[in-house]
Amino acid sequence: MTLIDTRTPDPKRLIPGATGDWEIIIGLEVHAQVTSNAKLFSGASTSFGAEPNANVSLVDAAMPGMLPVINEECVKQAIRTGLGLKAQINHKSVFDRKNYFYPDLPQGYQISQFKQPIVGEGKITISVGPDRKGEFEDVEIGIERLHLEQDAGKSIHDQHPTMSYVDLNRSGVALMEIVSKPDMRSADEAKAYVTKLRTIVRYLGTCDGNMDEGSMRADVNVSVRKPGGEFGTRCEIKNVNSIRFVGQAIEYEARRQIAILEDGGKIDQETRLFDPNKGETRSMRSKEEAHDYRYFPDPDLLPLEFDQAYVDELAKDLPELPDDKKARLISSLGLSVYDASILVSEKAIADYFEKVAAGRDGKLAANWVINDLLGALNKAGKDIENAPVSPDQLGAVVDLIREGTISGKIAKDLFEIVWNEGGDPRALVESRGMKQVTDTGAIEKAVDEVIAANPDKAEQARAKPSMAGWFVGQVMKATGGKANPQAVNDLIKAKLGIVE
Amino acid sequence: MSVDKATVKRVAHLARIAVTEEDAERMTGELNAILGFVEQLNEVDVSGVEPMTSVTPMAMRKREDIVTDGNKAADIVANAPATDENFFLVPKVVE
Image (tube, rainbow over all chains, first blue to last red; front, side, top):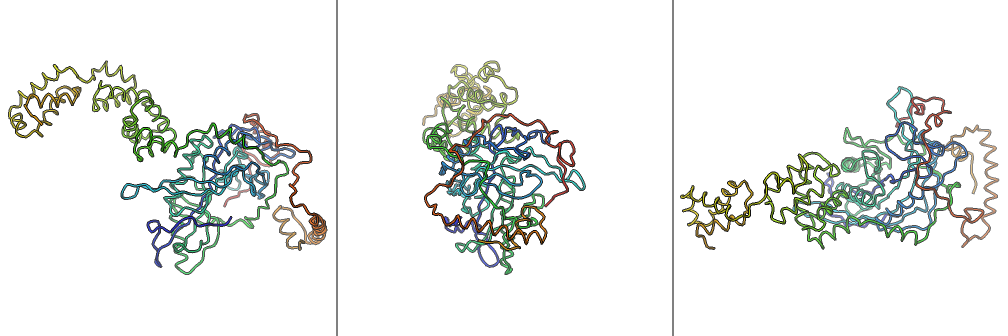
């Protein structure tokens, strides 16, 4: 591929060296496991954590005479992902053999797509920030291609002094390799890219995005150059399996390369590994002739062909994507960009919010989901999938506030009760006597009592109306927070003879 | 296009096939004869002709996304020289 520089050097992304500023160039290859029941070319299961070699068919074990038959759902998932990346869908693509020898690759080759991938150029908009002013910056990152390929098996090296253990359960599982253009210029951008890509595939349901189970991993290509100069020689950091590590690996690798160049050395193009314990990258002993994969079209597989109607059918059933959802939340519910960004960041959060907001005040629902629910989840270290308060329960709390049945303050207590004990919020308000007091007689009585008990404060308040707030606080306390604060305020002013 | 003995030995190595000096010599000649024949085919003008991928025109067969196979770990490792708990055991390979 020809490298095209799509970016203008930006001072805030440059990193200083002894000889002046340097610019980091980053491109990513993300391997995303396709969500499917069966493997790409066999009927064996893709489930995680099975017994050794339990999810293996004779095809996956490359027994002689076995032939691959493609799983159509994996093809559809690749097309859906391509559509989500606003990419060109190729109506004809070809499977090739990528030849190399390794014990966890029983075929002696990986079935992949080389010259004619199923998906061509696309793009992702990432959001970087917030900066010191609390602002986000949108950056467009180009996608070079997406192709389908087989995963390899797994080797375990620490079970035996002289032998490696091989489990082929992953062998033949469908992967989408999603290749970006070298469009990223900082570790933060690379992290934002992986995060956004993960959000998109999760919305689409084409990959679960669980990096700790290996469902998504990234090969990170890093090079450095003087701002705006020629592209430098790159190093590829293989198999980075968390977003945080992507950032750390880039920071380390960029500084390593800058140190070499500033000492008058040159960068060797090589494959490196990131060691999370030491926070550094190190050279993999380069496999002899590692890059001679001798690709050729797999004679066991015909070209993969479909028409535009097939693509249109899939496009029709595509869910709303995060960028579209964000725009809709801002325009139709009047949410702030910040709130909308948080709500769409994870599909599970967006789904939860939309259930709470259905038929209700969007802003109030957003406040409760972001400040109260996400805040409490964060504090408890829980995921939204395991939230103790359901969207229906939180919706009921919002309704009770809206109707004036409870005050905002009581609502916080109610939320805590529902969080800890569960139950129907409406019934809880009844049974625990949490209803807001709207009976003016009862509020009036409380107001009279507080004024009578504090004649000196009443005198001060008459002279200085801002003191009235103190009385509102006292009355709220006396009524256990159940009085309507507005009604209390009005009554106190009337009783003290404060006119505004 | 033709190959020399070094190329033949390299290709053999990539394919993990042991080839003696003597065999490499002989194969260089054989391979060059084949390449010469292919060269002859190159004389045919095929511009505008789609590469033939199947003798009879047919579309790729596809399977449904249903688990129909697996759960035969003992069969899978049956021919392996060394196994443990249904893992294949191979001489240690570590980067």
